[in-house]
Length: 466
Image 1 (cartoon, rainbow, N blue to C red):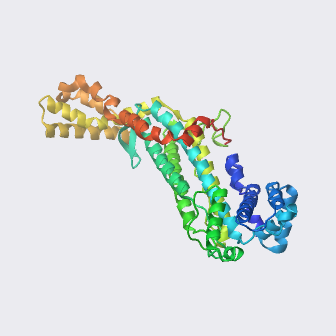
Image 2: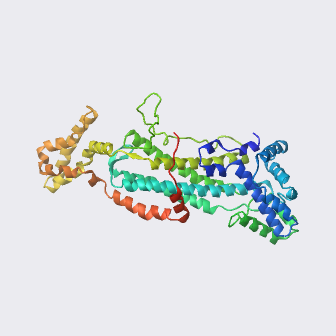
């Protein structure tokens, strides 16, 4: 594979947002290289190197590549077998006054690594804004269904009741952690800066006749011109690849969160309790016309580390793909959260099927309060429960435990209380209050940061093709 080809727009970019796709496009990458060369020339001139003003003006006027320049760069790279030098040559053709000073003292990683750090930091900012919108949408859903009882599940077996809103807060909490992790990674990104071929700045020390102060000032000037507060104090030719790990780890963690949410929604769709959006003309199955398959929450596998390419080629694929995939995941999540459909009657029916078993403890306590013996009551309800379970499991009939309790004289002291003992709202504990407190004390403060408030306010509804 030609080096130039590795910089082609990744296939996943066609599904990503326009801003994220553009961020990792060849046009933006090579424009950023030119901006970095310009910043280096500006700083070198400011520190005394004889660079003419005309050179800087021509560089400023030709930061964007035309289709013709892309063709020239491709041909040059095929000839020179070096992507950076191909673009140095191409830039020099449209900025001839600067041809002799473009890339002066620098190594290839001056543009490739510094550009990657720019893309990473910007990409993380895009993801933070998209993630804030998802959290906002899902929080509205949680608030709406804060008190709607629903059957809880442990090991996908019926468990005590929770609420639809409380379950959503579990998803939101993980998204908040992702917000924190991505923000930490973004805020920690530094600049490689001007470090030379092996990180020793030897070439720049030669340029400035052994003046160490000017070399340090050059590093600081280029860092600031490129929009960074600081540069990594030491590097080799490249910035440390632990930075990539620090960035990819929170993106992988975000993927785990999305997988959890999508899996829960697929299971709930199977139970016909909650569904993702389903268009009026959408087809769930080519053979089974009745099906409403959860297309958006379906598993999507992205292969990141599958080939033994060298470091440079590998990173050119993995970093853009990680960001583009995360961007797609968030836009899909937003679409799902904006169109979740809840079926309260289905939820209520399933509660009614399981609640009698869950109410047995309350029934025992009520009998004891009326003067009954706890052990005797336990044995009575145990026998009736097994009889009712036989009806459900072996005969396929409805759960008739409560009817059996009503027909047993032993439980006559509490017959009048059975309706109250079976009220679903008495089984959800503090779930509604937990939702309210969580949204007020955790979600709202997280979304109140200015850059996220603007993103939430500007975040339009996402429409996805299925």
